[in-house]
Structures are given as structure tokens and as C-alpha cells.
Amino acid sequence: MSTLKRKRGGRLAGGKKAKKVKTLADAGEPATDNQQEKKDEYTIPPPVSMGKWTNKERVLIFSSRGTDFRTRHLMQDLRNIMPHSKSDTKMDRKDKLFVINEVCEMKNCNKCLFFEAKKKQDLYMWISNSPHGPSAKFLVQNIHTLAELKMTGNCLKGSRPLLSFDPTFDKQPHYALLKELFIQTFSTPRYHPKSQPFVDHVFTFTVVDNRIWFRNYQIIEEDAALVEIGPRFVLNLIKMFQGSFGGPTLYENAHFKSPNMHRRELRVAAAARVRERQMVKELQRVKKAQLKPEISSDVTEGVFDTPAPEKPVTIETEPPEPKEKKKKKKKGKLFKRNRMQMGRR
Image: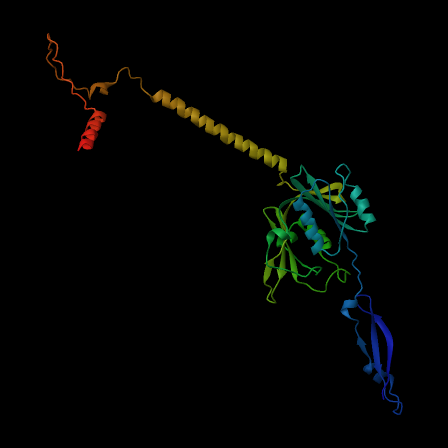
């Protein structure tokens, strides 16, 4: 019978050592030369599921105080679709943003998604590479969570996503930097302990109207049929900084308009429309007063007046004759008389 001898070989991708197996002849057979032994050796690769987790990207997702329920649900949805994320308590709005770098260091995270709420109606999102940068600040608009979409998709929790980017990300330098930041933040590391070895959904980043539109689709068929499962939101870029949550400005969006300015323009436009309607009414009133002629007497006043026929005047000298009054029959006495006559009979 033949025997197997195993010896360790070189390392493969993933950190596991490959195994070399050499087949030998039986004890009664003569030994072969070295060339024959090399031909009989073959390598057994390690199992894929036992790969080593080399990419140590961890994302901290938390927010400031004053966020509404929609923001909390959005953060929970992002934590569900990003198994390499961590959470933390809300940060006080009086604290400086540089404190977030210390929080990331304590949580052992090198990426951060920080949601900052202002006036209980405006939501800003920071994406930062902690602690050295770069970082970007966005205005988040048109938020729709997983519970709101109610689509038919249902991807596996913890599966690794595919990232799809618009061709615009390769044409302009600030979009190229954002693309690399998105790849390092949203992509799940390979062999992550909390991830699943499946790829069944796609993150798409599309540039439309100087804004970045985020969508999440599930791959439901082998022919790449997609169905949206959410969440969805729109990122309006404000500034990009060289450091983490600060530092020199790398890019500033010239098309960005603050929400306060946008609301002020809406109020000014509404007030202008009201003033315009009032001016139109005043002009119409003045115009009617000027065009109306002053008429002293109505020409058509006596059109339907017809003269009455004249009656002769008669004067009565004698009083009229008095009329005879008819006597009323008393029904009670007549009835009594009839009753008495009937009794006599």
C-alpha cells in the first residue's frame, strides 16, 4: 500500500498556508529519482471561508443631539447594510467636531459617518477618514428609509455589496477623491467576521444636478435584474477638507445654497406675489373709477311711465241707503223646540 507524506509549502492569499502532498510507491518497489518525486507533488489550497481578515476598515456611525426619527431610522438602516460599522451615543452640539477623532480612536474606527442636525429640520453628514483626513461635508436631502419604501426586495443581512459609480466620478478630481472615500467607507472588507460570503445587492452613486444620489438595489436574477430595497438619499456637497473634520479647504461647491437662504428666497417670492396681487387690484379699482362717466339724470327713467285714464269727479249729496241686516237663527232654541215636539209625539 502507498503512504502519503505531507509537508508545508508557501503561503496563499488570505494568510493560510498551502499544503503539498507527495505520493510515494510501496515499500517493496524501488525508489524513484527526484524528478519523478517533483512530478508527483501537488498543492492543496486552503478553504476560502478560512481566509484571513486583512482589511481592518471600521466605520463609526452616530449623530448629534436634536435629530428627528427619520435620521435615526436612516442610521439604523446604514448599520444593517454595513456589517463593519459601529455605533456610539449622541454627541452634544456644544462640543467641537475635533472631539470625534478621539471618539473614533476609542472605538478603534478609522472611518466616520457623522450626522449633524440643525434647527430640527436640516441634516448634514460628515464623511471622514480619521484621524488624518480628508473629510467632506454634505447636506442630506430626500431621505427615504427601508420602512418607507416597502419594496419587494429582501437581500441577505451582512452580505458584501457591489459599488457602482457614475462616469462623472472619473472626470473631475474632487469626484475622484469622493469615489475613493466612498469605496473605503461603504465597501465591506473581505473575510469580515460579521459579513456573509455572498454578493446580492448593489450600491449606486449617481451624479445628477450637482448632487450625489445614493440607491441600494438587490440582484434578484442571474441576468442582473435589479429591484430597489432602500434606503435612499441625496447628498449635496458643501466642502471638502484636507484634515479630519477641519483643516484647509480642498474644494467648495459654488452651486450650493444653504437651506436658510433657500427658505428666505421662498418667503421673499411669496411676499412679492402678494404685493403684485394687491397692486393689480388697486390698478383695477383706479381704472374703473376713471372710466366711469358721471350721469346727472337717467335718460331711460321715464320709458315705462304710462298716463292713467282721467275719471270724472262726482260729488254725492245724499247719504247711501242703509242695508238690511239678516237675522241669525238660533240653533240651540230650534233644537230644543224640535226635541219637545218629538217628546209629545
